[in-house]
Image (cartoon, rainbow, N blue to C red; front, side):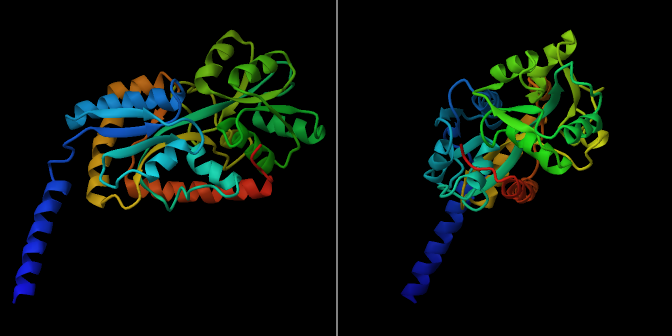
Amino acid sequence: MIARFIGGVGAALLVAASSTVFGQDFPTKPIRMLTGGVGGGADIAARIIAGAMTQSLSNSTIVENRGSGYGPGLALMRGSPDGYTVMYTTGIFWIMPLIEKGAPYDALGDFSPVTMALTYPNVLLVHPSLPVKTVKDLIELAKAKPGALNYGSTATGGSAHIAGEMLKSMAGIDIVRVNYNGGGPALTDLLGGRIQIYFATSLSADSYLKSGKLKALGVTSEKPFVLLPNLPTLAATGLPGYQVDSVTGIFAPQKTPAAIVDKLNRAIVGVLHNPALREKFQATGADTVGDTPQEFSAALKAEVARLSKLVKDANITAD
């Protein structure tokens, strides 16, 4: 009888506590949003989203920078699964474990996806002297001159690198990777003719296209990009099925209750679907997404499977 009474009280207290934690009271304190280094693209985007979340949830969302590489993910793993610690990250978060042996986490198994946030399409740029007008032309030229064309790449596993390797793999061509410390030096060498191909962000490509200094053959996204509506996709102009986007997303620690993940998702998706914020991100070359945790999880699994095959087939390893 006593045991039953204590159990009943415990159950009642648990229900009451759950109501407080999972109900309308969340959040009752500031939310920490972990991200990469200060001043980087992820940091800037995280601060825009965090500012809007602060207004949406009537509670502060504070950005904390945790450096590059595995830093933000490891910090998130140490966070309590209560909704008060989240992470805004780029695709490097789930790509690097595919490339490096002994990665400290499993991007698919050790975290709770909240929502896909942004996608950044790249633009396939070539030097104007290259005698090509379409992606099909470029593929034919590369096949006629194996090893003669160079493509610029930045960080291993970054969008420019993955885009170039995906082009090589799907088209069956031999083009040579030339590595750079950043997009600026790669564009400088493209302008100078030292490389012939570079996958640039849409924002960095825009001024060169308007001036005619560089030539664009297509965008890497599945659909044409709103800022470059007249530029076709690579998939539509010679390489069916090609798609490489720079993707960012928001995660919570593993075992964060589904009710809390859903509350975070609704708040963040509402922010991302706000027309003013969407226009702000489009001006930086990004499309806002804002999907469900289940949709984001499914998209991640499909992307990791696709990139795992590319990494294996192209023998991509950490520099």
